[in-house]
Every structure is written in structure tokens, then in C-alpha cells.
Length: 280
Image (cartoon, rainbow, N blue to C red; front, top):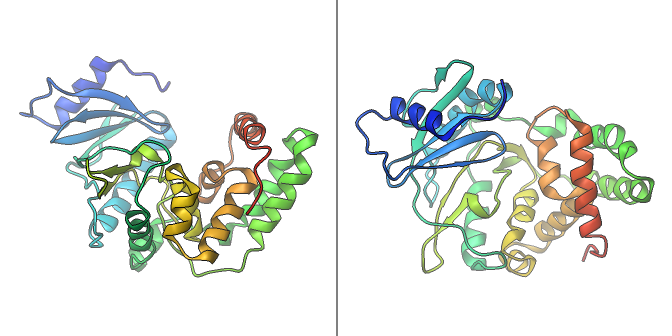
């Protein structure tokens, strides 16, 4: 199965999941794991791109149900339909969340802090714990040090080894819920800058909340610094400085290290771009 699917086929899947709904305004988008049919005001229909994301969709929807029921002070998409199979693809409709992403570098530290506190304070029930990966038990740093660092160009190996070891050796904090993908498009705001909702919990896991703080750096490191305590900020900078927190969560959320060549190329591009950055 390839990850390509024509817009017409995606709209047919959306129509099958949302019978009787008006789809004339629907538009097709997509991420790394799923195609998405956006039906404004109604739903987002997610369609798996690969066999791995199809297999994982039922578990991820159970995570979403648990998180949506946790009483967070912002909207979380909830499954509206069962996970349904269309040949080899899995699809599901989730509820619509209003708002839009902010431009890079913008964001109220008070709202950023509210988001990060709310996520880390979610009570991790036995059921939620059983659904989520806990990377401390899986020796996440060793996997990167043994499988990824040796594949980097020689000019980057020592730096990445030192910085991964620094991240690994941070003073441990209790594992909490980590969203794992707080990029720009997954955090929705009102026109006047209030936090409305958080989408796409596919990469949620149990780990150090400093990783979510690092992911919020889209809104500017100065805004993150003003939103969190000094130790969380320090941890965020150290995690990010290793190989980029966006790459790091690709291991922390439990996905196996596959396509290492592609992973390494992406890390090298990030390293080249941030070569002059230092840990504050």
C-alpha cells in the first residue's frame, strides 16, 4: 500500500463516515501519518497513509477518548465514529476544533503556560498508562547513541553524543502525559490570542514535560521561558539541543527506528541550520 490517495477517494471515505453531512466545503490536508479531510464546523476525517498508522489508529483513538475526558481547559478532538476499514486503510471522524495556529514567534506566555500545566497535570489512569509508551524503560538514549550517532557525518558525532548524554543524564522527574507534537498547526487560538484547542495526540507518551515545553518553541523561546519554571526551561533547551526535539519525540513516542538513513538526513539538515546555537 502506498501513501498516495486521490482527493476524490478521500472524499468518498469521508462521505461514508459522515452520511447526510454537507461536504461541498470539505478540503483535503495531510500529515506524516494520515490524510485528513477537513469538514469545517463538523469533523476532521483521518485516513491512514501507511500500514503502521492503520494498525495504530484504534489505540490512538482510545488515547484521545481518555484525554478528551480529562477535563482539560481547552478543546480536544473526540472520535465521532468507530475506526472503520476501507480495504487496507483505517479511517475515523473526530470532532471539529475551532481556531487557527499563530504565526511563528507569537503567543501569550500565560496561555502557553496554561497549556503546558494542563497537559502535565492530567491524571494518568491505569488505562491511559497502558495505552502510552514510557521511553525511560526502553533506554531511548542508548538506541540513539548506538544506532543513529554512528551514522552521522563525523563532524557532528561528538557534539550529538555529548548532548544526548546530557539529555539522558538530566535529573529525572516523574513521568507525566506529554503531547509530543505541539507544533504550530496542532495548537489552535482565537483571533484575540486565547488558547482554544489542541489537536493530534498521536505522539502522546509518558515522559519529562520539558519536551512539550521545547515543542512550544515555535512560539519563541523567550515566550516559553516566561511560561515555565527555570528547570523546565533548562531541560527543554537541553533536550532540543541534542538532535532537535522534533526528531527526539520520534523515538520517545515508541515508534521503532526505521528508515534510519532518512532520519539521519533530517537530523543533519537541522544540525547544519542550528550549528551556531548554544544551550543557554
